[in-house]
Amino acid sequence: MAWWKFGRTKFPTFSVIEVSAPRKLGPLTRELRETLLTLNSHPGFSYLLERLKAQKAAFEAVLRTQKHEELKDVHFVQAAVYWAGWLQRQISELTGQIVTPLPASHAEQEEFENALRAISVVEGEQISE
Image 1 (tube, rainbow, N blue to C red):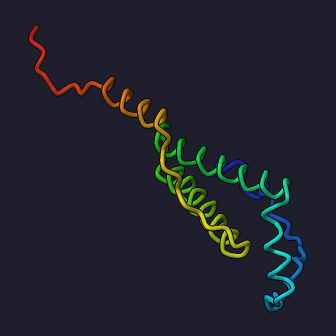
Image 2 (image 1 turned 180 degrees about the vertical axis):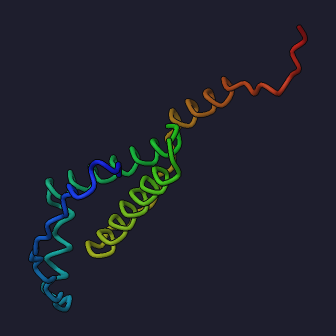
């Protein structure tokens, strides 16, 4: 602070913000479990799950492909990937979904092998001038 501004400092004003307390979660009853199991057949619920998967994949892509300015940016994206995965696991557990990866079809396997063949590895060579 410069000497000529001494005495003109504005002090922060404080406010009280009321936050509603979280309500206690009741027990998972048989009726509630049966209701949760019916969510798998709801199209809106399926859409939300697919959107969550897409968002997690987008976060993973950002983590792998983009240059991050600071380490805290990496931590934020890693946390987003973690919490999206955690949420998927919680939903899968409560709705009875079993997430198993499907084997690649023959066409997908061929495309993957073609892509691997197309990749060429360039080893560090000394360039003479």
